[in-house]
Image (cartoon, rainbow, N blue to C red; front, side, top):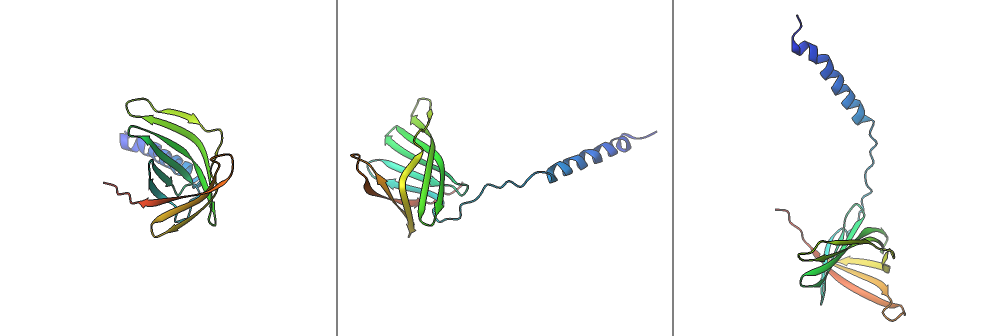
Length: 151
């Protein structure tokens, strides 16, 4: 009479073989990594607080505190070529303390138009074009690197 162990052994081996074969057939679809000193979090403090985050996988976010209890976060992607920075915003979330987050898609997806960047001594400088009165104006913003710690 066969024991349960000898009856189940072929099924366990078959299951392990199928699992191993299935995992070998998966494509290695790694997300391209940005290799740049811009990767990280940056904060600008003026009348408003702006926090930029550039992730190594090409994701971008910008948080702007518009008042003590509200703010806007813009999400998108970025690419760099030399010192040129292109940011494509795709989604915006409005945050008000005590209320549900309001999310919306962004129709005009280019953000920080004609932008170049420079990182030096823990500071990120962005030079880009704005249109305050329908005329192009060279604009600069400076951010300080935020050192994040995980606890």
